[in-house]
Length: 323
Image (cartoon, rainbow, N blue to C red):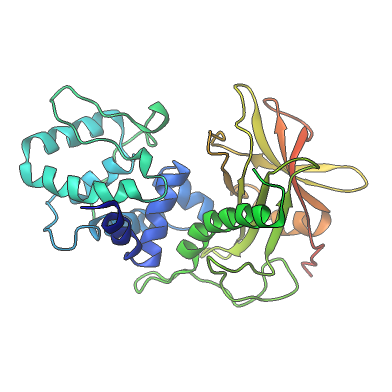
C-alpha cells in the first residue's frame, strides 16, 4: 500500500473517529486523560478510536481481540498487557496481518511516528511513546518567516490541532450525542460549531513577544457535560529543558494572575504545544475568571511557580460578562 493510499484511508474515516485517533496519537494521552479534558465519557473516546482504527481495514475481517490490538497500537496498555498483545500477534497470523494492515495508514496519519513496530520475535518489545506507557492498567476489550504569509501558515497549523479536539466534541453520536448548546460560550455572541478551516468568536489569537515566531490559538467550547472548556495549540514554540514547564495563566493588566494549569506534555522538536482545561476542580470558577482577567499568557516557569515567568505567548481576553 502506498503512502498516498494509506493517507487516504485515514482521511476516509468519519470525522469523529479520525479526530479521536489523531488526538490520541498527537497528544500522547490516555483515553481517560482525554475524557477528562474534553468532558466526555472515557468509553466514548475509546469506542471512537477503536472503530476508527478498525475502519482502516474495511475489507479485512477484524480479529476477535481487535480492540486490544488497537489499544496497543495507540499506546493505551500497561507493560504487562502490552506483552500479552505482542504474544497474540506473534502466535496468530490473522491478527498479525490485520494489525499490519491498519498500522500502515496509522503511521501516515498525524502523530503516526508514535505507532509501535509489530513484534517479530517473542522477546522483542517495540519502542513505546516517550519510553513510557500511557496507562497503568489494561482496559477491557470492546466495540521561520516573520511575513504575514508565514504567520498565517503557523496560525493555520494551530487551528488544525485544535480542530481535531473540536470535531471530536461537536460530532454527535447516534447513541450518545454530545450536548452542544446553541448558547454563547463565555462570550457575547453565539456561534455555530467551529470547523477546521474557520475560527469563531470563541477564538483568541496568541502571539509571541517581539522577535518570536511562536503563534497559537485558544478556543472555547461547551463540553457535553455543560461545562465551559478550552483547548490551546501553538506552533514554533521552543522545546522546554529539564526542570522547565510551560504554564497557562490568566493575568490582569493592573497586576494579579490566576494559574490555569501546567502544560502536561513537554514541547518537542516539532515546536508544537497543546493543552486543554480547565481542571475539573476549577471548571465552575473558569467562566468568572474569564470575565475578570485581561489576558491569557503561556509562560516558561520553574517547577511549582507561584507567578507567571517568561511570557512565550499572550492573547487579549474579550472581557465577556457571565451575567
